[in-house]
Image (cartoon, rainbow over all chains, first blue to last red; front, side, top):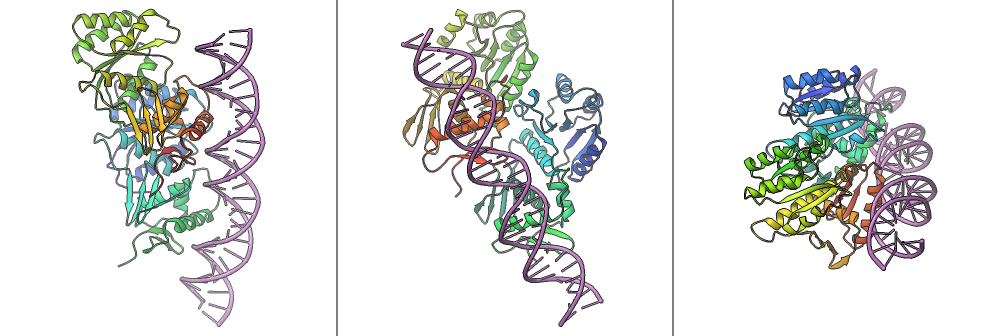
Amino acid sequence: MAATTQTEARLLVVEDDPNILELLSASLRFAGFDVATATSGSAAVSAAKERRPDLVVLDVMLPDLDGFEVIRLLREGGTRTPVVFLTARDATDDKIRGLTLGGDDYVTKPFSLEELTARIRAVLRRTATGEHAPSRLTFADLELDEETHEVHRAGKRVQLSPTEFKLLRYLMLNANRVLSKAQILDHVWNYDFRGDDNIVESYISYLRRKVDTTQPRLIHTLRGVGYVLRKPAA
Amino acid sequence: MAATTQTEARLLVVEDDPNILELLSASLRFAGFDVATATSGSAAVSAAKERRPDLVVLDVMLPDLDGFEVIRLLREGGTRTPVVFLTARDATDDKIRGLTLGGDDYVTKPFSLEELTARIRAVLRRTATGEHAPSRLTFADLELDEETHEVHRAGKRVQLSPTEFKLLRYLMLNANRVLSKAQILDHVWNYDFRGDDNIVESYISYLRRKVDTTQPRLIHTLRGVGYVLRKPAA
DNA sequence: CCGGCCTCTCAGGGAGTTTTCAGGGGATGC
DNA sequence: GCATCCCCTGAAAACTCCCTGAGAGGCCGG
C-alpha cells in the first residue's frame, strides 16, 4: 500500500497464525513501517526488550502467554510501549475493556488493513512527543479528518458511511497512485471478504456522488487498470 | 479520549494493587497529568517529600501504614498537599467523613475514571492559588457546573441522574471528538462494570430526551463509530 | 415496610449500510 | 461499423446497528 512515508516507526507484530502474520508484516512494511515479528508471547517479550519498538501489534490469543501477560511483563520492565491489540469479534473479554484508557486501542478480527493502519497511526499520533500530530488529510480541496471523522469538499461538509470513509481515506493516502480494484478490496475490505470486484465500483460510484460532483473531478477511472485520485492534467 | 490538557499537574498515586495502579497511572497520564507512583505507605512518604506533588491519590488500605498515617507523617513535615483518597465501598469509617473538611476528597472503589478525574480537578481547583478556577463547562447553549451539579440547556434547568451527569460531563470535556461506546464505557462506568454496550445507548437516549430536544441537536450518532458532541455542519 | 428513583437488561422495530444483480452505455479493437 | 469488454448505476435484498419502551431489581428515604 502506501509509501505514506510513515516516518519509519518501528513496529513489533506478534501473531501466531502464519498467514495473518505474513499479510500484516508485508503490508505494514509497505506502508512504510519498520517491522519485526514474533509468533509467541515469550519471543515477543524478548524481541521487545531488544528492539524497543515504538508500538506493538499484538494478538490477544497466543500459544503460550496471552497478550495481556506479554504487556504486563513489558511494563514491569518499565517500558511504556503503546499497543494495538487484535481480538476475536465476540471477545466480550473483560480485559479488552479498559484498553482505551491508556492510549492503547484494539481491532477486532477480521479487520481490514486500512482499519488497522489507521488505528496504528492514531495511537502513534497520540503518544507522539510533539503533542498533536495532524490527523487531517488533504488533497486539493478535499479534507478528511481522522479524529472527528469529518469530510469536507470545497469547504462543505459531506456525510459518509464507514466504508465510504475508509475508501476515501485509502485513496487520499495513495493520491496520484493508481489502485487496482483487487488492491482496494485487499485494503479497504476485511481480509475474509469473498465478494466480487463490483462492490468497489459501487462504492466508487457512491463516493463520486458525495464528494466528486464539483469541478475539477478528482476520482478518475483508468479503464482496465484501476482508479486514481489526482488533479486533472494541466 | 481526553487529551484534556490538564495543565500538567504533578500527581503521586499510591496503591498496592498492581492492576489498579496500572489502570490509574496509565489513564491519568493520558489525561495529561504528570504521574509518579508508590505501592506502599513508606514509599509514598519519601516519594512525596522528594517530588512535592500537587496532589496525592491515596489508597486508604495499604500493606504497611494506612493512608491516614501517610498523610499525618507528611503534614508533620509541614507539607499541606491535598489528597484524594480511595476507599472501599463500605468504609463507613469516621475518618473518611472529616476529609472533605480540609479540602480533600475521597472516591469509593470501584469508581469510574470520570468520577476520579473530576474529583482531582475539583480539589486542584479549590487549592489553586488563583482562588476560583472555573468549575463550569459550556458548549453551545449547554452549561454544566461541576460544583453545583446543575445543568442548563438554552437557559433552562435540567435534572439529571448521577450517571447522566457523568456521561454529559465526559461528552463536554471531549466535545468535537468522536467517542466510541467502548471508550465511554471505560471512562464513565465503574471499572468493574461487566455489562454490554447497550447501556451506553440507553443513557445517550435518556440524555437526548433531557438535554437535546431543542435545535440545534448537539449529540450525534456516527453509525459504526460512536457518538460526538458538536454543532451541526456549517 | 413501602414507594420512588435509578441502573441495567432485553427485545422489537426501524433506519441506515452493505452487498448483489442486472441492464445500459461508453470505450476499445477489429 | 460492429462486437466485445469493462464500467456505471439504479434497485432491491440482506444485514447490521441503533433507538426506545417495558420491566426487573436494587437502593434510599420516608
